[in-house]
Image (cartoon, rainbow, N blue to C red; front, side, top):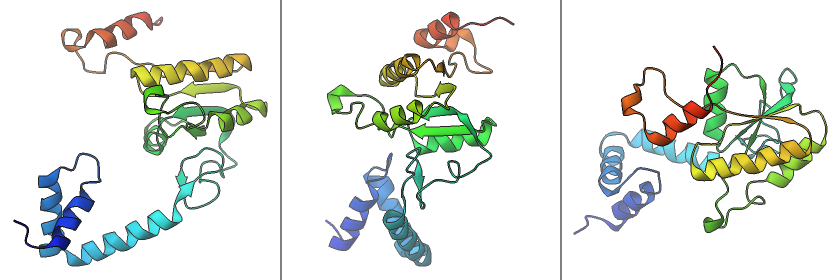
Length: 198
């Protein structure tokens, strides 16, 4: 039996977040109501503002409050290189840890014909327009190493080849500190076929 229809609605609303099941949502709801009402007000205010004011960068499609994100608007970034990623969080991670100083293009997903996600849904027509501008010398494909991510990488690499643009793929294989006996067969196979000189 529920204590309040509004509490039920709050719990259901929290379940929209990835990885949040009924118990976690209930715990969050009661925490906000019992111990942190100011935090709840602040969260709701910022969430509403974010939903109303954040859109997509006109050039790379990442999330931003402006027409162009800070990366696309930065004249110091290398315009000859584009890193293709699946999500805005991939942009944050690559920019934070790699020292990459080029530009990005965010697909907002990967090719998945069964889910009705084709090239148009990923904005590949916009990517084609950028590639046709002629200043791109390298495409760095950083899609996830899943079946869908690999299919997406192949499709984009073909776009690069048609325009004589160097196309590279992020290496994937055995993680640092990993032991061969614990690595799955697919990862080991990729690592073996993508080996390089030392």
